[in-house]
Image (cartoon, rainbow, N blue to C red; front, side, top):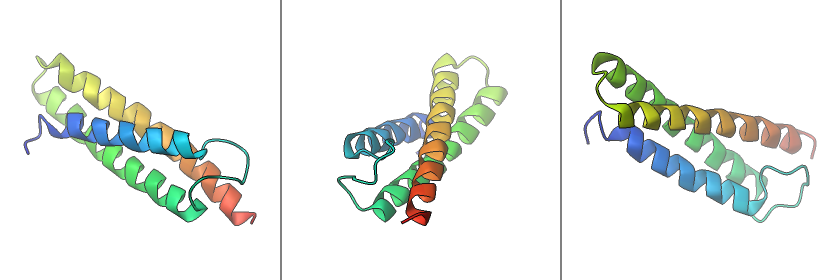
Length: 99
């Protein structure tokens, strides 16, 4: 795997993990979810780390080689997913702490 394909792979993994979190009800305010809360928190943390790495590698590679628009879009997608995972993870952490 080279640095050109990593942001696209990271954004794909992040998108799939975001769908899992959305499908299991991790983003809602209710304590009722289809998976245990710690599993959802782990998925959120893993998704955050993968997408932050994808945004970093993609942004840095695009900065060095500015002719790759797809690389910039993948890095921006990773950044948006990383922010979403951070938001969901902090929300899950708050719900788990109150149980």
